[in-house]
Image 1 (spheres, helix red, strand yellow):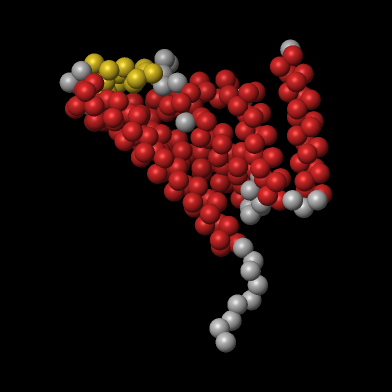
Image 2: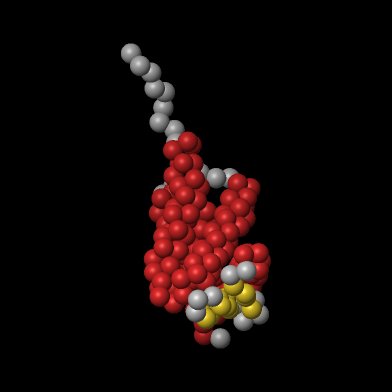
Amino acid sequence: MVKYIIGVILLILWLYALHVLKKTKLDFFRFLVGAAGMFFFLLFYAFNTLLVPFSYLVTSISGFIGRLTGCFDVYSSYGILAIQGKDIVNVYIDFECSGILEIITYISMIMFFPAYQLYEKIIHQVLGTLYILGANVLRLSFIGIVTYYTGMEYYYLTHAIIARLLFLVLIMALYFYTFTRTQILKQKVGKFDYV
């Protein structure tokens, strides 16, 4: 109960801060406060609700790839990737592997990014969530396939370094396309002529 009372107080303060920043036309600070606040609220109040469906979804889609390649099975109800190749390895899909933190971060940033209209934000949130989900499925499938052939000897290298770098590059491409490219294309710098 105390958690929700504190949440309501913080929500009121956050909304007031957003209102003040909008009135003063401080778009950058509104973006920072808005995205950070939304991330906080989604993390502390919606995280547990979102974690199980996303873990289930990621393992189910990865399981299709595992069955297709014959390299691993999944137990979606438990969020487990079972690899029975050179060695037997079970990978538990927890909050870090579900991609939910990345999705929450992306949704929070898009919601307060000033370069988009509301309908564009909704489209980017849906497509970005699907993209992050797909990138995470690719990462987990990569881990499953490589571990199937190499075993526990290279599991840490595959999981903690190579697959994480693959996922990071894919997320950076999404952020570049969504934020950097859009900001460059929509900026107004005035008329420019060569003399």
